[in-house]
Amino acid sequence: MVTAAATAPAEARIWQLLEEVSDPEVPVLSILDLGIVRGVAIDGEQITVTITPTYSGCPAMNTIATDIRLRLLAEGYTKLVIKNQISPAWTTDWMSPAGRDKLEAYGIAPPIDGTATGHVLNLFDKETAVRCPLCKSAHTHLVSQFGSTACKALYQCDDCREPFDYFKCHS
Amino acid sequence: MPRFMPAPQPEVSVAPTPSVAANPLFPFVLQLADTSLILAHRLSEWCGHGPILEQDLALANIALDLLGEARSYYQYAAELEGKGRTEDDLAYLRSAVEYRNPLLVEQPNGDFAHTIVRQFLFDNFHYELLKALKNGPDAQLAAIAEKSMKEATYHLKWSSEWMIRLGDGTPESRQRLDKALAVLWRYAGELTTPTPAETNLQELGLVPDYAALLPAMQAHLAHVLAEATVPMPTTPAFAQQGGKQGRHSEHLGYLLTELQYMQRTYPGLTW
Image 1 (cartoon, rainbow over the protein chains, first blue to last red):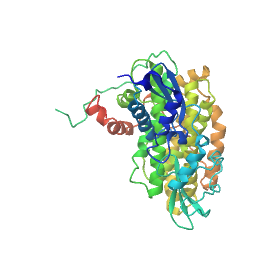
Image 2: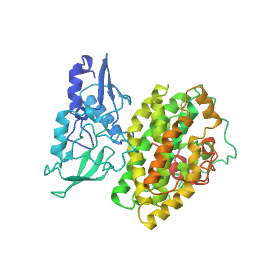
Image 3: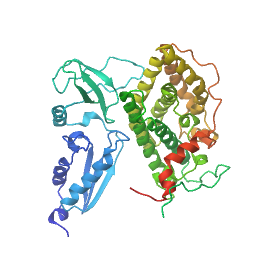
Image 4: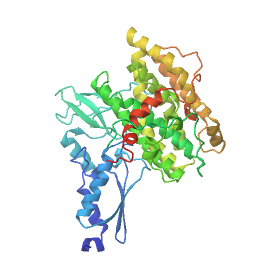
């Protein structure tokens, strides 16, 4: 069955649907908030969505590609191509301001721009001051650069004592 | 009737004739893929056994990054080869003599210090290699390197800091670090010693000149060892090599037996 939507696909509609696809690891973020959708191309009935992986080994990428496919299929778009594009490499600079607010409200400290680990000779350097997403205290410390997923570091608040995830700056 | 034992593999005593792939980069990309996959597998063996939870997570994170990098290389290698093999065929259906990883990355985990030294020696090379590949002439390799370098930066920082903590730590941690360095140092030289195949590609300008990576690698090594209060090894770093040409230590066979178990037992199995 060919629906009206499939015969006259409008790019704006596709973007709207992509906004409804969320990150499986951080469900409050849409994939647009996360900044991983590079583009939408419409060629007749074929829709190509190009996405950029966050981290090379991120297991969520396959799920995201499947979720995009399912969301568009549900609207009657059947000729779908989900393309992976690795260059230019994804950066947290592409995360939307709304996404950053949603992250903090969800209990994950959003990335602080300009704090990516760029200088490897800078060992044991002073860690990034990250605000606790729960009690908003600035008295926090880094527990590990490697957290519950590839994109996060583990912090602990020195005031409310709660451990929390920090979405690492990656640029 | 499913078989529950791995299917017996044919005995292969000599490395098979190198593929006559049209693209000369194929064997090099495959070597990069094998290197990242084997180290990722080794690190994944730590999962659930790390000294503390946070470092267990760090080891698993690094394993995952390297696995992702390996996949990018395998996908590209399959494309370069152009014979219809997929990333899975390349990872799961090649025997030990066909693998092209340097010997260092297949060495067993040992204790935590042993794993840290292996990781540090690799990261110090990997970081500089990716930096060079990022600016290389092949667009796809440059793209993979650009992506992976961001991750490799965290890896090198992590392993460097642990070298310092263990070296300048307690007598126990120091003794373990010294022992690991004495064992693993002899494998470090293979990373930057080009094989004849690599030399050919270097002359064509397709592969970075390893000699050009050495000054930065030496500087970082010297800095970290000095901070760790550990003397620079004086023995040759290139005593053990051959992995990049398919001559492996006995460890790789056991590793692949586990890594390839499902595909060897149930050929063509998919999720």
